[in-house]
Image 1 (cartoon, rainbow, N blue to C red):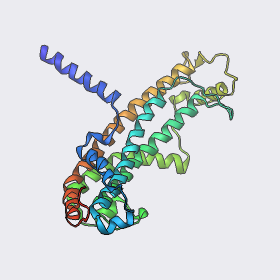
Image 2: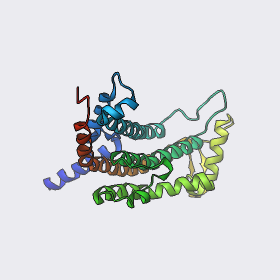
Image 3: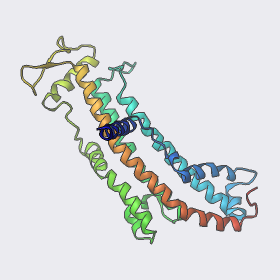
Image 4: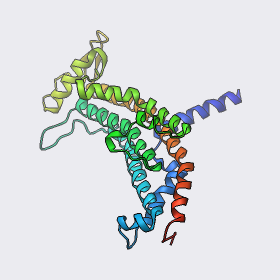
Length: 275
């Protein structure tokens, strides 16, 4: 009995960690190393001059730029749970008010954009590591597959891409076809309409007891129902973001063994050394 209790506690602790997890690439030692190496490129020489006299510094600088972009983008995922937990709805502004469902839609759009683009930014880090001569519009997983990269790296990149497939599908349906989620199931029309009326300053008199089309004879509060919708979205976001984060860290870590020999070879030709 004691063993089972301990296991249950571990499961609860893991669930709590997943709910409160902070997203950062600095879980990776290699990411931290590259982020710190960027400083060696600074000095009295221009970037163009460094290409000739210190190729190691140029390589470190270029890698640092890509890693920093990925770091900032991954860190921005932490904004989504905060936005979904926001309580001050509807939002008032000089340009008009923003209703509860409109805010939820903004959160979904932002979450989909940021989650799906993590893969794209990680691909540019792969390209930079192997110094591939590709134009930005050419960077894709399919393109990388045909360039003879190590299978282990491609496997990790594919795992990250696979996590994002469904997300990209929903993002494309929303952006290109205008297909939106129906929040609240059968009650979605009433929830949408009441949210608009409330934002306009004309909430229906029964806003805290709206009739349910989903459960006849029952009523619901708009604010309570929208809070439940946002909380469900937060759980969904956390699950996917955790998968994206783990896959991203694996991609970053897989690049370390390929970066080091390239950088050291360039260091051997440097006229500036590490000073």
